[in-house]
Image 1 (cartoon, rainbow, N blue to C red):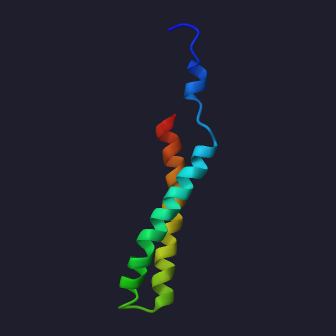
Image 2 (image 1 turned 90 degrees about the vertical axis):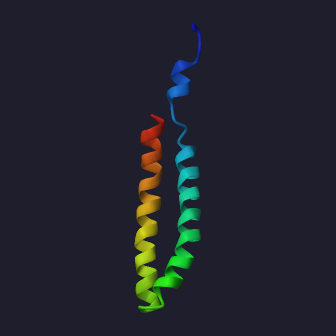
Image 3 (image 1 turned 120 degrees about the vertical axis):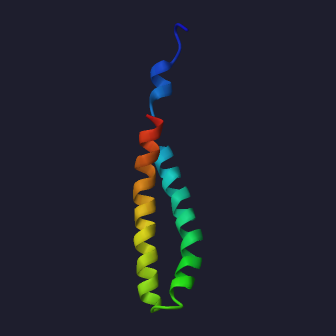
Amino acid sequence: MSGGPEGEWRRLDPRTLLVTAAVFCGIAVGAGVPVAAGLSGGRPLGQAVAWVLAGAVLLVGRGPPADRAVQI
């Protein structure tokens, strides 16, 4: 294949990382609400929310870089 845009296809559009972060944020919220409700049965609500927020930060913080590594 000559004359094709090989270099253009290998480049990752920076907006895809924002979309990935938004998707992971939605997953974190969707999973975090029932987990926080379940954890709050045995411990204070503030402590349960802190555990869920820590997990959400890890999920959203590590998701887009992992997506970038896969697409390169």
